[in-house]
Length: 446
Image (cartoon, rainbow, N blue to C red; front, side, top):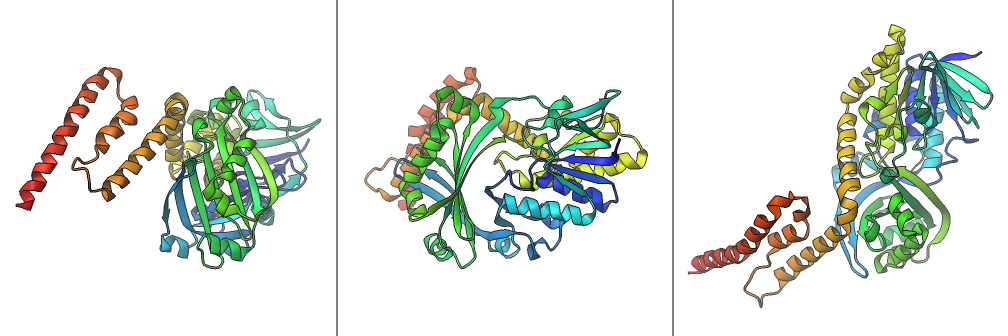
């Protein structure tokens, strides 16, 4: 019966980063991928932020399959016909290549190849169906009727992790799951650059809220690849199910928005993908490891609250390798020995990421889903009123944006007993504040 030091299940970015790190340490590692080739389960494009990859593979820009450096970033709100955006470019970030667009199919295959080059054994077309449990500890994986024993098993097998569930570390909570649907739309490079006001080879990334997904607290993303646009929308699975919403229909509505329609005019559909993703921080720290097993990547909830998963996934795989190296050195693979995983995570920003993501996730699940659509509507109305107040000179009364912000947005977060007195104070303060400001102006004018 074959046995190795470590089995890594899943050859996505987290698993390949873990296998690469283990192989460099001289640890016997087998990397298992259920697809017939690495990356075939991830056809979509993504935005890659590079600091983690710079640490893992210095000089990766020389041969990594990248599309465009992202020079411009945008946050935008879409109304039914309106659009408000904040667009920025930080040249220092562009100069050092902070972000690129890329295709997961190509990137995942490239990174798994790096793990192979370092000495990890990559096996594709291998579906792990269960874990081998001996004396209450994970001792390997089952692949159909076959077994592969290992001192440590790393679960890097995504949101539906077989490893995490079989080890009793992960339970489903559909409230933290989102469905994303994405289209890759072909456009010539020169058209992309003219349309988005980019220099040759540069890219742009949009994060948008509002139109077509505001009632499900969803989001829309748009970014440029070398010769295509990636357009995606996301919605919470529980809300989609409860309301019988077809997210593909919502994507079609987004494409009809005047701003989006102008961005994708003349584009031809290349690919379509639907994918379940998890909100970050969904697993307690104590559930990231057990006897003979660790979780990294999306299997361990290493997504931030903006649903960025590749860099934290890779870094979690690298830290899992650090933990495994220490366990092998001691010859101890118990949960107590592998609990140093948390210490290793704390050497990076990942512990903070998991905490912040869980805090955001709990807020969304417990509060924001019911209130956020109204918040956005009020916030955009306030922004519009502020703009109008700045360019209209007929009304001597300043716009009471502080009062409106509190009444429309902040009040729902205030404990119930305090709401009535604060509301009364806000209503009283607005005319008083206006009078005091007008008095100050009159005094300055004399």
